[in-house]
Image (tube, rainbow, N blue to C red):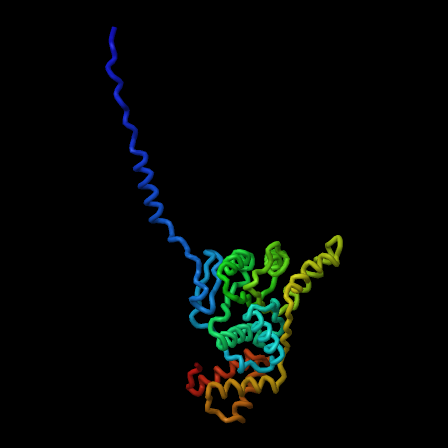
Length: 294
């Protein structure tokens, strides 16, 4: 009878050490964790929806609020609404709609600058691109935790046929279970009063079981904005007033007669009068004069 000797103890492979090496390698490959943004590091930010982060904007491209001509009523209403919000008082979301080039986005940035000039750091301005509207809930959650009074701004907001991202905007503005954070307000500019093309709403009316309800679904998006500010084409006097204000502000050495004649010829070649056209003319004049605009 053969007696077997003592059983030899089997050594298991060094699995623990192997797993540690794998974990260490993955940590080196992974991007560093994103820290919560410092909303006090700047007065303006761009929302990056892909990484859900805020990029500070050191210098905002804006014009002084005193240079915006022909929009006195809109300026005063938006300034008052924004000032209330900056002081922690009730204020409305604002929709600035109407003619192209009449200073809608310029007014939002100018009002923000004016408020912060009066009280440094009173408001943060966060711009979100129209394509990123569906990420608004994530942005709102981040801003709510910051506690800083913030304007979320979307320029040239509109929705085309078959888009459903407008529902995210509706929920964030008023209709969601959580609602808009108290420290956030939403300002948008658009060429459309109802943010939807007319043919889209008419198509919904023709195919819906209850046409009126289908249209109301779309129109109710604009109703989420308590403050509607309309911008219309300016008169020639308003256009020339813009030109003169820009020329004086930037110290252009040109006679009033030459400035006026050139401004009228400039707008005639473009078939339109607006604040944008006025600024383009001023840039042309400054370039011919060899004058740098600050």
